[in-house]
Image (cartoon, rainbow, N blue to C red):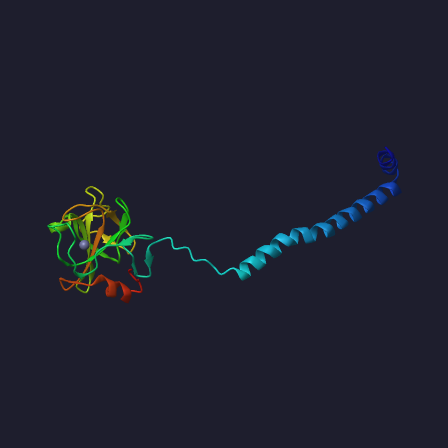
Length: 203
Ligand SMILES: [Zn+2]
């Protein structure tokens, strides 16, 4: 009980108050000096972490620049372009005009590039289909989407990465997948080299 007595006594004289104020200032200084390194450590750690760990780029969208993948994230490759009949499917085309890719029934399908929607609905054997005119006689086609899943209508302007609909099994399809087709001047071309020319490597 010595300290309160001394404090009480000190407060009773002007000199005592000065001494007490001085002591408190010294205590505050010492505390600040002791705490400074402790406070500095987390900042130093954060600083070193930021300088040594490479910056991770988060891709919020499927698009990279002007063009992007029609499915976000991983997918399994189905039939590529050209002659490759589907085993056990009599109604499936033998000379495949597009590139089949699957992520799962209901997966969101995105516009691969910017353009204007020219088809949104049932189209030939492709089931629920979206076609986008990118100008320069370049058209992309997204086939077999689920009925009632389309987010776009004919005439809509879309950007790369715009959601179009959901992966489905409509039309001449043999299990949920996206039939992705690229047409130049009305003729289907192999989507793989086309996408590669946009810096997007399909499997
Ligand atoms: Zn296909």
